[in-house]
Length: 198
Image (cartoon, rainbow, N blue to C red; front, side, top):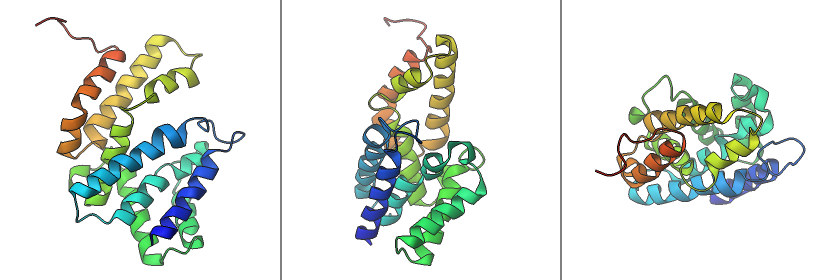
């Protein structure tokens, strides 16, 4: 199973490196997907009941639709494409079905409380949100949208950060470990404290 996950991982890395088709090709693997996987695997060590293969596959498939076609990333057909690719790589149908089911839960974070989701979803989702708090993620958004006014960029970052913190990061140990980073990024997005010395 680990070999299949590695093959799928390599496939996503290759797709993400497409300089003509994928806008985030310069940074997406190194500063996003790899970080999510590292955080998720540490969380798997803490939650031994989690299926590591499902978690890793969720990490590498969670943005698959965005990589294939940003305009259609939320279309239901993209879930089917993800499942077809997993089957093409040799994953069993039951495993592929579970990954796509869990991906569906992951993607409905604004509609459902992920605190009640299977542990694999909670790990992948929390790792995704936490990874946004590491490295150049927020700076890259400024670079890729440099034509927009600074205030608009900051407001957009505040909204995304709030969604990550309140809807994606659902494991308490992640909130605890990343709280200082969250506060710092929130300040960089314009949510300044009332007092600087207290």
